[in-house]
Length: 373
Image 1: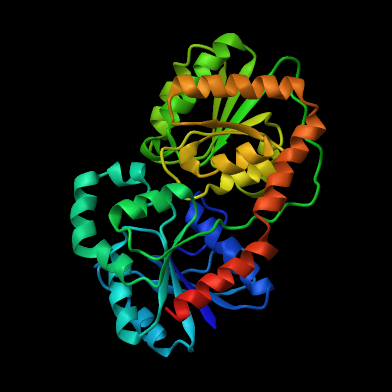
Image 2: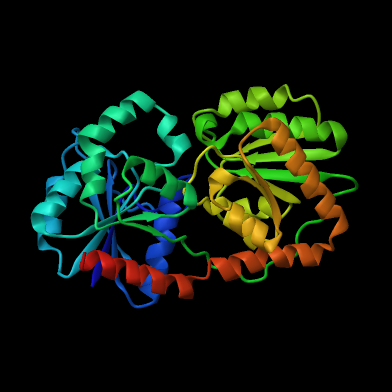
């Protein structure tokens, strides 16, 4: 069985696009396990300007009309070896409406992973436009999908509200625990350093809550620091909010990738993610794999894992008061728990709940269900 991951982009892990990172990791692990897997990307720039990889990648030039498939992609789907399953990544993408119709014509089953697009909070963003598009196009994509793959419980709830009859699979992606690197950099004196890493998009990531809640926390812990790693459409707003924070030190560091990013993460005492909606954020797993406790919202879909392994705090929603209280609890845990023990809990969460060898069996079963749906 061939698995074809279809995405917008190139599955470049060195970008601030979480979907690209997830698809790169998933295809890498599937290839290592001996699967017949390829990534097909629709992009305006078809230059192969990404790091070496272990799976075949085919790039197709995007046209001006987002509701039409590139001609070369249509031919490639027609010629694809059978049996095959096409795995669409993302939601509310006009090109996928065209892809779904073409795949149905060709008799090729497909799976949709929305990556957070159908969570209740995500559906409220541009609500009227999404409601119209859902009725005209997206319902077709969902209705004819062999499976809808959910990364977290919030997506299942959102899908049930849209159509309770949809065949869903709830399955996280895995994460490869890095080899033990240099020990965490100790923070000086009374400094408690909190970090965030991701796209600077307020409506998605809850950045006003991140900064306002940190300011409340820093009034009680004046040595606190917040490092914001990333870039995006709201960077200027974030910089203004950071400059106006009533207490603590906030640094907006811009995008960082590879070892430069991990060198910064290793200097954190806690990692924060106050998103309004998500699929499953890679950045939380990256931080936890380094042994850093996390303060996250339920919307990240990481709450059950954080609670199970006692490696951080979970907020009901992105509210500054809740975040400040969560940081305070994390700070008390950080003071009262031996650092090696706390770090090990974080790493245990990643190595146990997100182990690729176990999860690949579940993915194989999902693809088989799609193939014979």
